[in-house]
Length: 264
Image (tube, rainbow, N blue to C red; front, side):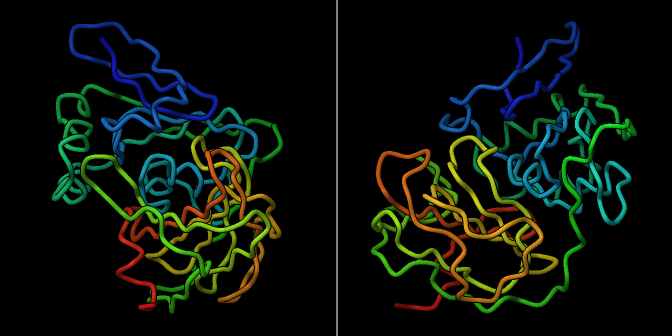
C-alpha cells in the first residue's frame, strides 16, 4: 500500500513500516481528489525545468521559506533540474501546521507516515541550467488588497466537503485580471495541474496570491507589479468555463479571500 502525492512530472517515495519503497507518481486526478488536502510534510520533490521554489511550495501547501530552510537553501534560492527537495518539516512545524486542519489533512500528517519517510535533504549541484532563481520576500507588512476582477462570485472558499482554496469569479475571455496588491511575480506558467495558466505574486513575508485559468499571461517571473496592474487576460485554461480562480495564502496556507478583499 502506498499514498499518492501529486507532482507535475516527478515521483515521491514513501516508506511504510515493513514495506519496501514504492513510487507514488504524478496523477492529474489527485488535485481533484477530496481526500488530498495539503499541506504535505513527507516525501520529496524532484525539481523539473521551469519549477520555482514558490510553485513547489504552492503545490504542497507549504511556506516557501520553510522548504528553503529544510533544504539549506540560501538567497537567491537557486534550484536545479534533477535536484531532490525534501518536503519533511521539523516536528514543531508539524504540530503547528496540523492544528485546525480537516480530517483529510490530518491523515496526511499522520506521524506514522511522516516518521517513516526519510527523504534526502542534500542539494544536487549538477551542471544543468538553473530552473529558476527566486528572490527573498520583501517585508512582513500586511498588503492592501483590491479585487482582481469585477465579475460575480460563482464559487466561494471552502475547507470542508468539496474543497475550494480560493474564490471563483465569472467573466468573459479576455477580461482584465488585475494584481490584487503590489508585489513580485514569482511564478507564471502552466506547470501546476488544475490551475491552467497561473500567476503567483509574492507580497510580503507572509502573503502570496494566485490567479488561475488565464487566457493570456502578461507578466514575467521577476516582474514587480503595482496594485491594480493588469497581469493577465481572464480565460478558461484548465477549467470548464471562463473564470478567474483567485487565492490568497498566508504562511503557505490558503485563507478565505473574502476576509481580505474590500466589501463590495
